[in-house]
Image (tube, rainbow, N blue to C red; front, side):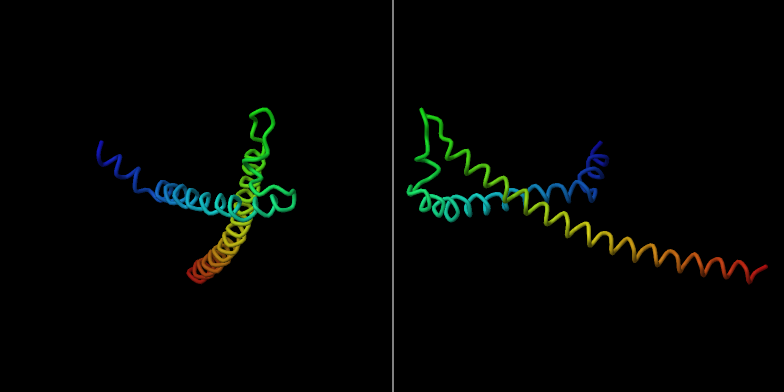
Length: 117
C-alpha cells in the first residue's frame, strides 16, 4: 500500500498540481495586494472616497468589498488566460517539432526497409 501511495504521490501530474496550487495561492496574494493597496485607492480618489471598499455600504451590505472581489477575479482570470495562451503556444511548437522528428524517423525506417528487399 505504501508503494502504491508513493507511486501516486510522486507521479508528475500530482507534483505539478501541488506546485500549481502553491503558486496560485502566492499569485492570489499578489493580486489581492495590488487591488487592495493600488487599484482601489485610485478608484476611491476618482469617486471621492479614500477607502472605497469599506466605505461603500448600504444597510450593512458592503458592496464595495464585492466590487473589490470582482476586480481581483478579473485580474486573476486575465492572468490565467494569458498564461494558458502562452503555454498552449509553446506546447504546439513542441508537438510540431515532435511530429517532424517522427516523420523523419519513419521516412528513414521506410527507406531502410525498402533497401533490405
